Amino acid sequence: MTSELEGDGVAALLAEAKLAAAFDDPAERVRLRKAAGLSLEQVAKAVGVGRQTVANWEAGGMPSSPSRGKYLRLLEGLAQIHPAPAPTQEPHTAVQPQPASAPQAPAPQAPATESPAARQARAGHARHQNRRRTSSTEQVHAELREKIAAAVDQELTRAGGDADAAAGALVKRAIPDVMGLFARTRAQARYEHTAYPALPDILRKPSKSDPDLIWEARPSWRHPGFRRHPDGEVAVTALDVNAAYLSALKTWLPIGKLTHSVGGEHDRKRAGVHLITPPVWEHADLPSPLGDREEAGPVWVTEPTLRLLLRLAGPKHRLVEAPVIHESWTSNATETFLDSLRQVLAAARADALATGDDVTNTYVKAMYSKFVSTLGESSHNREIARPDWMHLIRSQAFANLWSRAHKAHQAGLTVLSALGTDELHLAGDWRQTWAEGRGLAEMKVKTDRDGQPVTYTVTAVGGGR
Image (cartoon, rainbow, N blue to C red; front, side, top):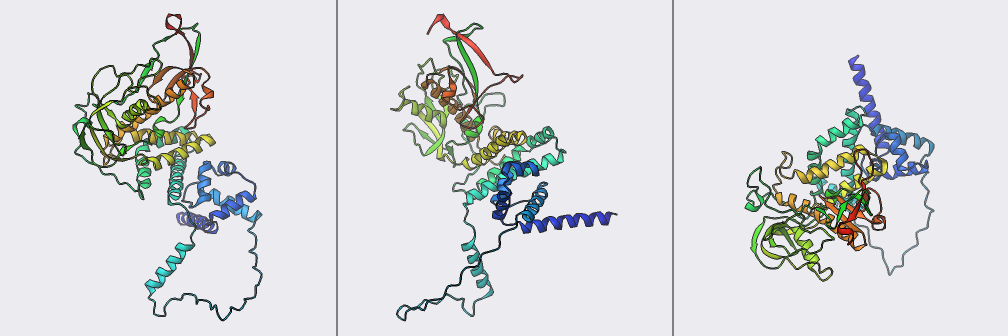
């Protein structure tokens, strides 16, 4: 009985391999779906995967997954209904004789004594010249989106279709999985990163119980001119910024070893942490770019905070005086170091939202949030000893929130609160400023534990403003 079962398993694998070979051409997969008038969503639902998985299958490779067999059987059935058209014959054209004065150059031929290795190289060159031209970045992104989809399929299969159990398993594996994605996006990158264990003391916590010495400018601000009141005159809506840490992966990161400098002008080609004397903030209608800091005097801040202050001191805004830079720890930097990873996760998130795939959305959220919060502190990412990156990415999220508050203020909205990295409380028609939704450029209304929108009323302190 065992040998019969093993034989059946082998036959099933051979049958699937035969189908995979028959439909190896991605263009044929697209042709069959379109010939049947099917959308990506319809195929994805029938096969039991996300829309992006089917899109990836149609764009290139088709790695093994529990759902691949269903997809191949669907293609087999569609091929029987919509067979490929017979190739058309090119009409015969008589070869015109060439004038004697313009002899044709003979086609290049391999030398008669060409070695087997040289013939192999020649054949490889021909294959390279004739292959389908695709951006290497596009290939990597498609491969990694497929890897995300395969991980979700794997955990759903293990959980017997239990979405909650699968999501829990995916969250547990989020750190090693996102580090795998990160490593793949760096495989052909221009910049290399190296862990430097000899970090400046400013990046070391005095003890586990003490706070970091770097000020990240986390806001917890409420407008001083209003107070909550059940019969208040101003209606306020609490809004959520979508995927704040995901957007913050696009930030200027130092790549090499941090070196010390004293004073001087800010070099935009470098990034790190800076000891500054911040300017006085005198705008009661907006939170301070330094968040809740009340102490006067010098403070160590991150690159995003310094760049925000310098921008607000520039000719476009003139909201503050320029900060005074006393000393810095910086290295050469780039804003796109994590951008490839950000794009992969953002695309997977968008596809999950479009198809209502909560399992994939939970998995992606765990990957980008844990990537930031555990950098260098997990057994899976300990080789990246860059606490400066963690500070900079978190500060970029805070700076992005401040920029949204400023945009609302410029649009005539009243900013009542700015909290953490992703929460704004506004009075006024905020939908004139942002579209409502879950996209990275959109805003959504915050809800309470019962799923009800968070709204309340306030009244001006002293009866007016």
